[in-house]
Each structure stands twice: as structure tokens, then as C-alpha cells.
Image 1 (cartoon, rainbow, N blue to C red):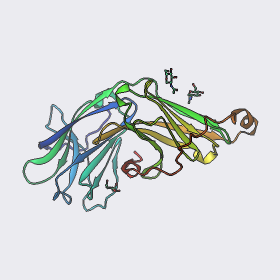
Image 2: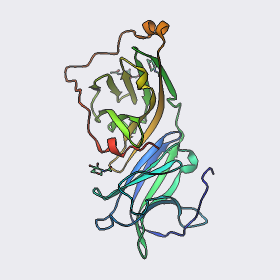
Image 3: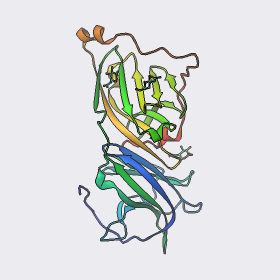
Image 4: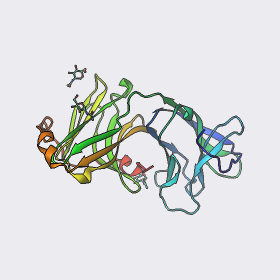
Length: 265
Ligand SMILES: *[C@@H]1O[C@H](CO)[C@@H](O)[C@H](O)[C@H]1NC(C)=O
Ligand SMILES: *[C@@H]1O[C@H](CO)[C@@H](O)[C@H](O)[C@H]1NC(C)=O
Ligand SMILES: *[C@@H]1O[C@H](CO)[C@@H](O)[C@H](O)[C@H]1NC(C)=O
């Protein structure tokens, strides 16, 4: 176990609702636990059920904090008071993360909570690092389980605190285009392909492909994009760009709650 328990509180959440979450090793999940109106100002926590204690705290909201992300190792959370929802992100998942978790609201007495059953599935090859050259293009191939063929999918670039949405494709669409970005979703093969054209050095950074599995949670994979200014290579890599946008191309950024809820860690 890599997690060091700084303190283990004896928390006994009373379960109000429960959800099942699937994640993939090496990737992450973003879970949203709804709570009842009236609990906005109460502290919230996320804990894991252990045999030694009912629930070991992993992360909690900061006292008197504004709505902002709190980080602790691979965990981060934000209490969205306007939406009455606690969003928790776990990165770099391993099979050992499988288990029962609770999102709890700390009150006097039994804490109202949501039970989260997380199952981490051993994933196939990871995307890893993708390299490209200024002026060229890259194609990122992402295989997903066929059960998610109708899920909405996003690509975002991780920044200071949030992940800025670059392009999104709704479940059911085959192509989506936005500026230099295109997505092709081959739903019969479970293969998502992300095209980025006219690359420049500023495109380097960490990206996420997010699959919105349900109303309650999304899972994601991260990859690094490394773009170098290599004049000798530019000509060979600026080969013909991927298929041109179809007639119904959209160049506007697709707004989504994930755009703001996607934490840096
Ligand atoms: C809280 O949720 C609402 C509704 O989904 C959204 O508009 C708002 O941006 C969210 N706030 C934060 C800080 O994520
Ligand atoms: C994705 O697949 C295409 C075609 O099969 C290939 O040209 C491209 O290099 C692949 N992308 C990566 C990052 O491996
Ligand atoms: C989707 O993938 C399948 C299997 O690899 C392939 O036969 C088919 O041509 C692909 N469809 C499109 C539209 O690319």
C-alpha cells in the first residue's frame, strides 16, 4: 500500500445511496456524489472501508474554503455547493484501489453518505507519450470497452487547476471537429481516434481522454504530448492531414461541466 494514513478517524457513514464505478489501471476516475440541500456548509470527506476501521479518511474539504479543488496525493475533490455535489478524482489507479468507499457529510450523529463500489480493471496498453513535430500532426488511438460505445467522450489539456476541454463527441456521433482537433469514434471497434493538426511547441503537455460512463462518474486516461521544433523532420511529418471535416463541422468549444470539474491531479 503506497498510501500513508496521516490519521485514521473512526467514521461511520450512514448510507443514503450507492453507486458502482469502473476504472482502469493506470487511468483515473471522477466521481460525483450528490447530497441533500441544506448540507452545503458542512465538511465533506471521502474514505475507504478497511478491515481495521469502518472508514479511513483519504481526503476532506478545507474548512471555510471557497469552491476550489483540494489535493492529497492521487486524490482531489471539490465541493460544488451550487450543484450540491462532491466531486472526487482518483488518479493512477491500481487493482489495489478496488473496494468500497464513502462520500460523507460530517454532521453530529450518523453521517449521510454515498457508498461507492470501485472496481479497477487491468487495462491493456496505455497511451504513454505521443511525439510530434511543429507543423505536423498526430493521431492518438484510444481503445475502450464496447459497453461505453454510446458514452460522451472528451479531450482536455491539464492546466494549473483544471483541465481545459478541447473537443467533445457525444455518444452516437462518428466525427467531431473543432479547430485543429478532430475525433473519430469507431463504435463497432471501440476505438477513439484523436487528430491534432498544425502542431506547435505550445501543444506540448499533459492531456486526458475522458469517457463519461454515467451521470455519476467518468473515467479517464492521460497521455503526454511532446512537440519538438525539428526542421529536418518537419517536412516528412507534415504529411497530408487526416480526413477533412465533414459538412456538419463544428468549430465551437463544447461547454460541459467536466470542463471545470476536471482537476489537475
Ligand atoms: C458546479 O456545478 C454547476 C452545475 O453543474 C456548474 O455550472 C459550476 O461551474 C460548478 N462549479 C464548479 C466550481 O465546478
Ligand atoms: C494510431 O494509429 C495510426 C494508424 O493506425 C498510426 O498512424 C498512428 O501512429 C497511431 N498513433 C500512435 C500515437 O501510435
Ligand atoms: C471500424 O473498425 C472496424 C474494425 O477494425 C473496421 O473494419 C471499420 O472499417 C472501421 N470503421 C470505420 C468507419 O473506420
